[in-house]
Length: 332
Ligand SMILES: NC(=O)c1ccc[n+]([C@@H]2O[C@H](COP(=O)([O-])OP(=O)(O)OC[C@H]3O[C@@H](n4cnc5c(N)ncnc54)[C@H](OP(=O)(O)O)[C@@H]3O)[C@@H](O)[C@H]2O)c1
Image 1 (cartoon, rainbow, N blue to C red):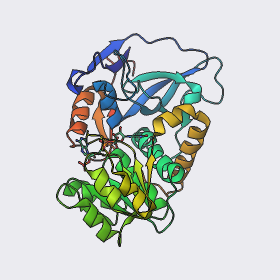
Image 2: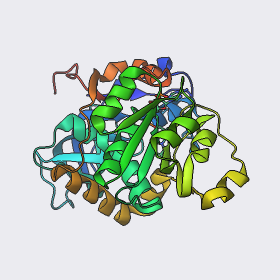
Image 3: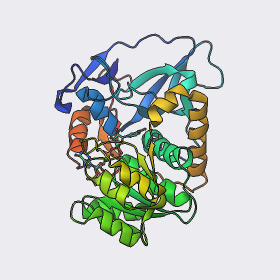
Image 4: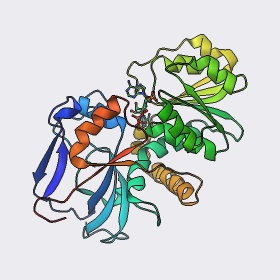
């Protein structure tokens, strides 16, 4: 039997259910993967609420990233064998104890990389790497301000910016989150719920910052835009705070600033070869010890709804992975 989380209706996370069903047969170009950990991301909450830009009609299983072990390969599959450890970024369906995915959609887990870390890094790290190496290019010595710095994208952005030679200022809501950001490599912090973001960012950046990484939105976006120095870039990644900000165009004109949109998910779907290359770059940096994805918190698959609620309530620090338990028929 397969156990999976199901969103039966667009609703609050508490209404997610866990169901058991028969295994499905495998297609010729597919692999069956026993999921060992599946990442939780803010976008999962948006899918469940039906508020994401892509609306998936229920019922569906949320979860966009996982790591696990191949248990069966289709007849046309070459280069992947039973027992291989793989990562997959699949958009939906990861919150299950088993998935069937196209063989082409799996990537080997590099030797030495832990399963939970592997399961949780694709979305956050690819977004951060795409932002800071493709949508803009962070140069050594630049100052990068990261908002929501202890979230999934935030911690990844600190790590990536630091690896590219930048100095990082982290902004977050609590001392514990700011401490996480410092551990990840930020050299200065701003408690943006108490301190004036624009003023502090200008002070700490020696007059301004070069790049803002913004996965939060709300009122912080304009304050961060105003903190950009000459030639500064604001990367708009997401709106975890809720309201989509409206920005005064004169603040873009001043100092020759640039506002850069980041839509990694859509880009990755439209450019699978480039995405594969991007993920390879990220994994190579991890293996070389230049990127340090943090160890996620492990929670049982059955707690998916509770974890999503905690994410929406800003109680989560870093990333969480959902870990499936044994199947009721004893098959795992
Ligand atoms: N454009 C893309 O390609 C792309 C890719 C990945 C993710 N995203 C988007 O980026 C955003 C962050 O994703 P994530 O997975 O990093 O999320 P996350 O781990 O939950 O981090 C989001 C951070 O936002 C801050 N926040 C401020 N107000 C909040 C509120 N009302 N509710 C929840 N969080 C709030 C929190 O930090 P503080 O408490 O410190 O403020 C939190 O740590 C989401 O909007 C997601 O959809 C976009």
